[in-house]
Image (cartoon, rainbow, N blue to C red):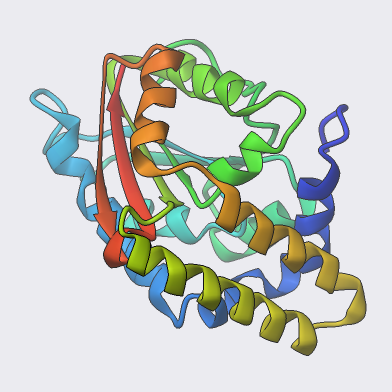
Length: 240
């Protein structure tokens, strides 16, 4: 664990590490896996000339139990290497057991132990909300992702987003509150506060346009997004 206290974020992942994938599937009606696959499908087209088709060096930051790490290992070009990093030891233990041979590093997103410009690709899936709640803040973590990317390298983020439609927003908020309440009722009492935190972070995180502005402010040269499901999730692609 990092030296700084990450408060609700650390307690959240400590409480739900062993049930993380199961409850994610429940809360998203099984769509979280589809969204991850959709995000990874954008990668090769987003990497640009000189990278597509050749081996890549990728980092799955905030990798958790390794869902996206596993997708990257399967779908990136032959000869590519994929590493994972996360600040939570319990989640990393599950990732290491699931993906032997992948290098996993225990480290916070704000202080990655890698040289400058070493990765072609950095991915973060469903973690930006938590980084925004950390003592360092989202901006510091985005600058760290930028630092470890090579010039022209690609950052890919999958995250919940405030839907642009007021009609969709209304039902999205109703569903999130109901799903979190149902999950909390089914989980051990000690895990319930963690999911209340999750619901709050989903409902208060920024929209996709604001996230693009955060990426540009951190120093990325270009940033764009594509909304999924209809606008409640967004794939962000940024270039160093």
